[in-house]
Length: 339
Image 1 (cartoon, rainbow, N blue to C red):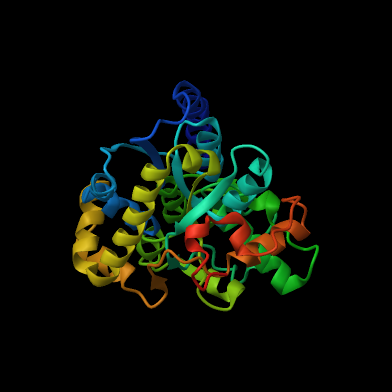
Image 2: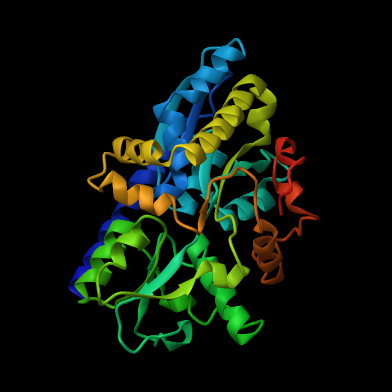
């Protein structure tokens, strides 16, 4: 109990500082300058490669401009969305549900859309409690940790899983059980076994680390919800930025595609890049194993994102139902077999 309270307090205490940093960052940069926000995990590996190999700068030079890139690290969809709307960052990577919410709310002003997918990697829900074998086994006192409660990628997947298992209208069954905690704190809570946290909805490589503990087991895989692989995270920007900075936007888009293709062909070096950029203590061989899994595919083409849109519209989280996945993505992707 005390450990969980301390972790939540630390997380909440950091929020005003994050908001202050965002407010002080000022408007979006001009052509030739770009600010990019990312989060934690191997899902964001294409951004690590872009940064490490200076691919944006490379494609900027090819387009006839010098580009200065500012990389920022933020946690959670709310912080990411606030940063991009305020102009504190120009590009951001976050879950499909936060992107759809932002697309819906900015359609008549800055116009946030997806630049591309960051691939397909499963998310799993794990538990340390012997009596929990299904998502319907969580009791009122059990807490399920994730980057952000309800509105995060993991929170929406859990809601969708409940709807699929129990029927429409049942998606909120575990809303009160969800709590927002950073991945490191969630892992600590689960492994300690001394808090109310009995579930953790994670992402790679955190989920591969935690299941090595014999008392932790998986009770839900996101592929069960989507009947196969699906895009969980998108890379996005504002229509306003693209219009005002076409060469910079083009360089970032080209860099994202090059990084994604390079990872697919160079898993070993990509794993070493991750460890180097993250300054991680994890073994590169372990990261290579994670990104080489059967449930992992690095591609910029969105897959099954429209499933999220349908769900969010039906439960009233977004007010506008897109006609297709192309409505909330930039036209550079529209010749691809997305969904």
